[in-house]
Every structure is written in structure tokens, then in C-alpha cells.
Image (cartoon, protein in one colour):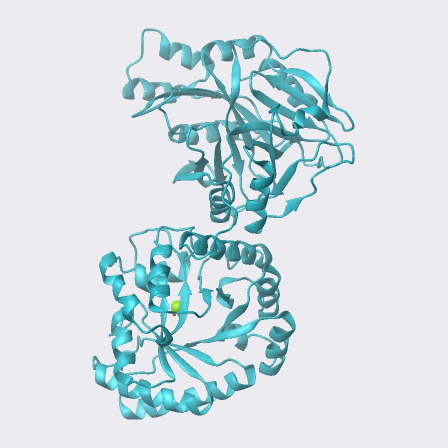
Length: 601
Ligand SMILES: O=C(O)c1ccc(O)c(O)c1
Ligand SMILES: [Mg+2]
């Protein structure tokens, strides 16, 4: 179906918004009146700009407080409308949105509302314009889609139809049965469909709508179900995003527009309207790649953790460090940025690397060159929204090129383990404005399942964290986002969590090898003693090593942290089979301890 986006959903001036929408690949836009009023471009210039960009102007909006008012007031409203219709003619827009009145002058009289909307439609018709009447969830007398439709039906004018807005419909929490009536509206009378999701929150609906709308798939509404009803009604107009969101208002318009279009592609797939290449769910983490100009401190850390440098890339300054199935690449090549060691790439073990890349490309993920150098094994790779490179790869599997073929052994065998077995999870800090986008990307592009988002208190702000995982937990990625950047943090750290079967032994070995574990305050252990019963001496052992402890219905979780080098640190974890979490309850203590380690805290 055609795709469209309201200019209010993107940051910047009108020109920037239009450019971003067109570049992302939208077919059209809804022009918000405020964006037009503030634009230095006249209506004809905006029209020409849209035409140049290949965008249709699908809707002009909003017109407010029109209907069910006393005659003198309605006379003034018609005069105002006529002005706007002339403007729309210059703009080349043929549909106007009228939202249900919130005016104290409006009366509860459907017959009057219908009569006045009919008069408005007659006037619009003379200009070749159609009027789409939308129920705002907080409308004074009309607040539901079916009420708005009854008035449109009663008004009975070909230039009057309804606009359905998923937010207003779903925010009222109505019984899914009530939505079935949508399919009974004649499709040609649904003039427009606006789509927005929102996180499920108990709050005033107007505030919720104006600040927290998000793109489909990023919130808690069943938009695929709603879209199904609208399609059954026979609607064939554009799918248009109308998202009022405090974060998107500030974020760069270009990436937001791509994120927005991806959400519509995923929605159409969920509603059974399209069949993009199926997701290829990764089956493990093949490697994590760290880059930095000086990887000496990380090398020391890895060595203390029991890793050995087993191989070196044939043509590039990249070392492979290994222990059990855990593999870490250290790259000092030209990609290394001066701001210190960071996690730049992740190798995802994929049953069908080429299929995974096709899926990613169909959902607008930037595809990276298959070979980084001519002599390299070809590898399918895409960039995640935060720029992390994701390699879809095979590790020594028959019939598929193995990324390990690019590496030559350096003579140190991988240690016979007893310590680290594999990578338990990766914690990837997202840019502050890309949290919802990142979750949708990892779910839709990689086919991972998203867990609930949790809030974690940091001494200097609140962090949100949301894990995406495959079914058996062999791929776990904790997506996190902190407060807006401040001068002191330079982007929060990312970390690699390493799974061990015996954390106490692993932690002791790390210390004996000269590694330093993060110090956890005594108060934490006093609290643990109050919350859980431990075997004799265990709590003292945890306290002595700085090991944190958590438990859920599935079992226990023990974990401890190394110091941070550059923007990266390691976590050692011992996870009972059934434990699903990441120790989020302990994160405030860990974050505070990490701040203490910085000078001056
Ligand atoms: O919040 C509003 O006022 C508003 C305006 C126009 C819309 O289409 C809408 O859904 C909400
Ligand atoms: Mg709307």
C-alpha cells in the first residue's frame, strides 16, 4: 500500500522533513498546518518541492472546532474553512482533516453536527476538496470512531468521509469486539487512515497522545489487528504515520524517517499484506569485535579472564582471542576511533547468512560490503541503527564460508576451559533517541523476541533496558539507553557478559591473574542477607569477590564486573538454566560503583 507520514512526526523545518520522508522512501506526506505556517516557502513552492521529491500531499491538517456550534459561530467557521480550502488548492492537497470539536461552544447534538459537516463538505466540494472527519479520543461530544462515522453517514455527502486514527481508537482500551464495526464502514467512506502505536500507560489520553505516540510495533497496541479491520472494510488509501513524540521531535529526521518506514513494512507483513524474506533467527554469538587505537589494556583484561590470543587476521591488524566458545576480536585497524576501545561489530551465527542479509535489506538496514578486503572471505553484514556492524556468519560449518578462514593460528591453543564457556549476552548502549528503534530493528530484522523494558536508576539519571533474545537464549542482547548525553559521560559503556559454570572459581582466577573486579558496597550484602538464605559461608564469598546475586522463578544468577577500558567492560555470569533476566535489580548498585571509580566521585 502507499505509505505516508505526517510532518509532525519528524524534526526540523518543513523542507528538512520533506527531504527526510522522500529519502526514506515514503510516497506521500500529511502537511501539518504549523509546519506550513512556519515555513519560508509559499504554498506553490511547497507543492513544487513535494513534486520534485516525488511526494504526494495526501492530507492537510488539522481543522478544529468546526461542528455542532451556534449559527454565528458556524458562519465564522465556514469563512475560516474557505480560506484554508483556497490555500489547499495552491498547495495541491485534496483532503483536509477535521477533528472532532473540543470547543466549549459545541453542543451535544449529532443532527446539528451532521448538518454543519454537510455544509462544510458542500463548500469543500466546490474546491475539489474532501473532508475527513476524525474523532479525537478527548473530543467534547464525539470521541469514538463509530460516533464520528454515524455523523458522517447521517450527513450523507460524497465529499465527507471519516479519518480513522489508530491512537484515538485503541487508546480508549475498548473491547476488541467494538473494533469489528470498522469492517462495516464502506471502504470508500474511510477517506484516510492514520497509524500510531503507544506504550501502554495509565495517563491522561491527550498527554499520552501528544507526547508518547510511537511507530507501529514500538508500543503496545494491536495495530495489525486494527489494520485487518480497515482492509476488510475496503480501504485502499495510504497507510499514514501520525506520531507526536517528544523524542522524535529532537532526533535527526533522516534516521527517524527510515525507522518510520521500516515500522510500516513490518506492520504490513504482520497484517498479512506483504511477504518480505522471512527472518533468519541467529543461533548464537560467533564473536564480538572491539576496536580501539590501543588494545593493550583490553588484551590484559582478556588474558586475566583466561582468554588466549589464538589467531591473527591474515591481512589486517585483528587478533582473535578465544576461550571455550567465546570469541573476541581486537581490531586496531583504521576503523578504530580515538575515543577509546568500543564494541564495533557482532558476529551472529546464522543458519542462512545470505537469507538473513536479504531480510535485513528488505527492512531498510544498510547492507555493508561483503568483503572488507579483496582477499577476505565474503561475509554478509548490515549496520544496526546505532552503527554496530552485524555479521551474519558461520563458524566452521560445512558448506558455508567460515569467517575463521581469514585467521591464521598464532600458536597459542585456546585454553582448555573450566572458566568461560561462551558469550552469555552483549549489552549494547543505544544513542538516547534510538531505543525504540533499536528494539524494533532487532525484533523485526533479526527475528528476536523482545522482553519487557525495565527502568534502572543510575546516580545521574534513569536508564532503560530491554533484552532481545532468541528462543533458547543462545543469543541475548540487552539494549540500553541512558539519559541524554551530558558533558561527562561521552556515551555510556557497552559490555560483554561471559558465561561460566563456576563464577567463584573464575573470579578468583581473574584476581590471581592481576585482574580487578568492581567493588560492591557492604550495604548491598547486608541487604542480600535480608532477602535470601545462603549456604554457610556463601554470602561471605560473594562479598569478598564483589559478586552480585539475583533470583527469579527459574533460578539464580551470580555476576561480577571488570573495570572499564575505553567504553567497554566485561561481566562474568553464572546463570541457572531457567533464570531469564540480567540482574537488572542489581544494576543501580553496579552503576553507582562504576561512577565511584571515576575520579572526583
Ligand atoms: O492532538 C491533536 O490535536 C491532534 C490533531 C490532529 C490529529 O489527527 C490528531 O490525531 C490529534
Ligand atoms: Mg489523527
